[in-house]
Length: 215
Image (tube, rainbow, N blue to C red; front, side, top):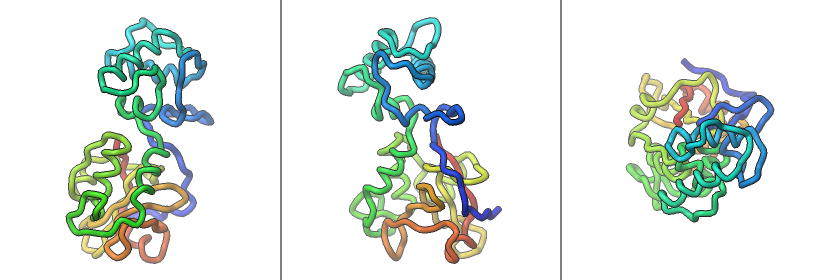
């Protein structure tokens, strides 16, 4: 079902639901001695993965949390400093909206190449595969219709969601991009390479077929 997307409210794409008015886990670096509700979310994820063994979670980033973060970092071959930043979040399956946007922007201007899936040249699904793997360690299917089948439908896209299009108007999904906020998405265009387009433009709005979330 097609939806008009002008006036969309931007929100983060996260593995933990944020509290209204509060930055969500993945958006902030957490360090020892920090007092923040995000610390409790971090502890819960570390506990789920077997790194945090204390019997309860709290809002305090103390020695138990630091030890758990260091254990994860050592196991994953990271710099062992006990700080929960992008690499730790990625290892836990959490990614911030900025990580996806930054990765998408890094390849702006990359030429279009049919079947391309490297920075030498991308097609639309190859581009999505590459940036989601780099930014969030998410392994997407290779073609648009399979990417669509695996996602969770959303009423309107938030940053980091994938938006889908029926270019030919024949009922088949044939193009996709990543939503980057403010009614815009980035994609590998066959005519322009990796670029930004407006969802509610006269070209894209009639072809828009919805959005899905991956996390």
